[in-house]
Length: 84
Image 1 (cartoon, rainbow, N blue to C red):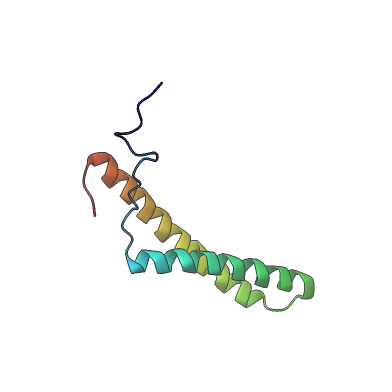
Image 2 (cartoon, rainbow, N blue to C red; image 1 turned 120 degrees about the vertical axis):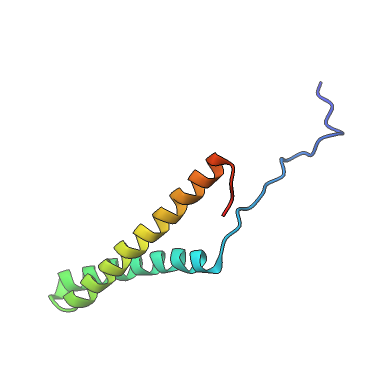
């Protein structure tokens, strides 16, 4: 049997530090995806709002690129032992 009196039942979890800019970028990513899908579906069904769908898709792709670069930079920093 294992002695559990000296160690915690769950490992201590350290939450990564997030800046408000990164949080807003991730929220914008989700919102722009929802807008692109909604406007795209509406424009496919009715033939209207194609410009809004294209604009939402461009915002989504730009935001996706920024968020992915941020995520990969954080992983690279953690692997090298430094923090932002």
